[in-house]
Image 1 (tube, rainbow, N blue to C red):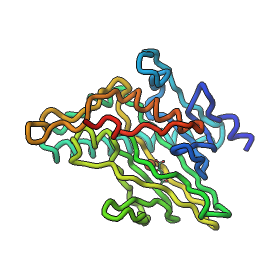
Image 2 (cartoon, rainbow, N blue to C red; image 1 turned 30 degrees about the horizontal axis):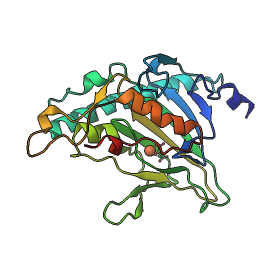
Image 3 (cartoon, protein in one colour; image 1 turned 90 degrees about the horizontal axis):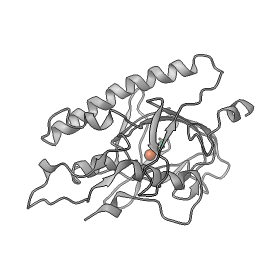
Image 4 (cartoon, rainbow, N blue to C red; image 1 turned 90 degrees about the vertical axis):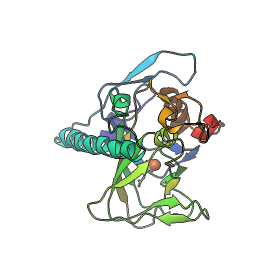
Length: 262
Ligand SMILES: O=C(O)CCC(=O)C(=O)O
Ligand SMILES: [Fe+2]
C-alpha cells in the first residue's frame, strides 16, 4: 500500500494509482493504475466552455517492479498500432478513406488502465464499474479468465456476460465513433460485476482523439434523407466534463453524447 501511495493520483495529476473512482456518481469496487499513451498529453484545464487554458499531464511510474514501465510502454505501443488499424477498417466500412481519422489522433489523449477488481464480500451490493459507455473512438480491452464484463442488450435491456476468450481482445466502440458515423455505429452500454471469491484483472486501452478535435458526423455521411444527428462539440471539453464526476461524487448527471443530439 505504501508503494501505491507514492504514485497516487491527485488533484494535479490524474495519472497513477487510484482506488475511489466513481461511475455516474457511484463508487466503483476496483483499484486502477492509469498511464498516458503519449507522455506528456495536454487536456483542457477545466470543463468551463470559455476557459482555454490547458493542463499538461504526465505519467507517474513506480520504482518497483523495475520492468513495469518498459512493459507498459511496449504493450501500449503495440495496442496503439492495432487501434489505428481498427480505425482504418471502420473508416472503410463507412465508405470513407482509410486514413480519414488519423489526423484526430496526432495529439491523442489516449490512456491505458490497469484494473484490479478485488473479491467483494457482497457482490450484489457493488459493481466493479457502473453502467456507462466509453467516450472515445474505441477501446481495446484485454481481460483475464474470471469474467465480469456485461453488455446491455438493446432489445430487452438484459445484461449479457462477455465471456473471456483466451488471447482475444474485446473491441468496444465509443461515443466518438457513434457521432462520426452519425449513428451507423453505436457505443454499447456496459458494466462490470464483481464476485465474492476471485479478483479480476483487465486492461483497457482508451483510444481518445486530441483535445482540440471537434466531434460531428462526417459530411460524407450526411444528406437530406439522412441529416446530421449531432451538433458539433469539442472532445476535450466533453472529456473534462465527464471526468469531473469520475473523481468525485457530484450532484449533476454526467455528460452524454445524447445531450448534443439534434
Ligand atoms: O474491466 C472491464 O472489463 C471493463 C472496464 C470498463 O468498462 C472501463 O474501464 O471503461
Ligand atoms: Fe468501459
